[in-house]
Length: 128
Image 1 (cartoon, rainbow, N blue to C red):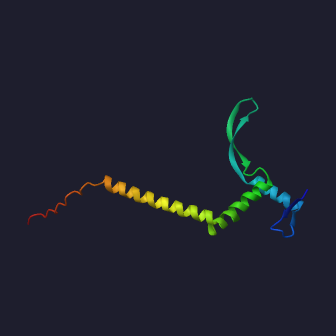
Image 2: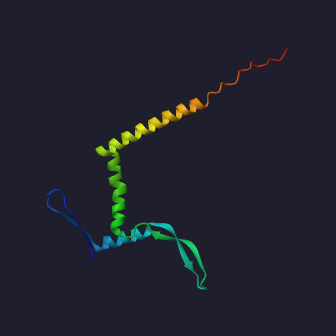
Image 3: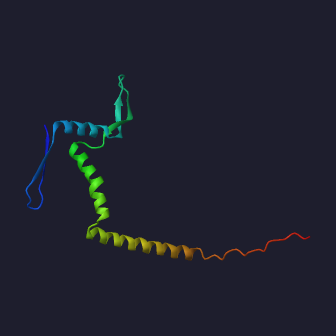
């Protein structure tokens, strides 16, 4: 059965598009091919159990795969390129905190290492 997606935005007429069965089958195969290793209990024919790493799909379903990809490839780069005001404010506060921490650490290190450098000994020249 095809997947139908409806996009509605701010009073505009909805845009409807369909992922047909052929495209859906390709997407499903692609989803199943993207795996991560997970630990699973394996029981052999003699009844002995052990654990093994087995491949498991990263995403449980197509919508999860599509949303993860949309988030990683579009949403996060957009936020980084054009951050919202609240993200800009948080970033500025974080930068101030990092700068203050660096200054405090530098002052602490300078105060902790107030040892005079060793005296410089002139080089000895062999007598001729």
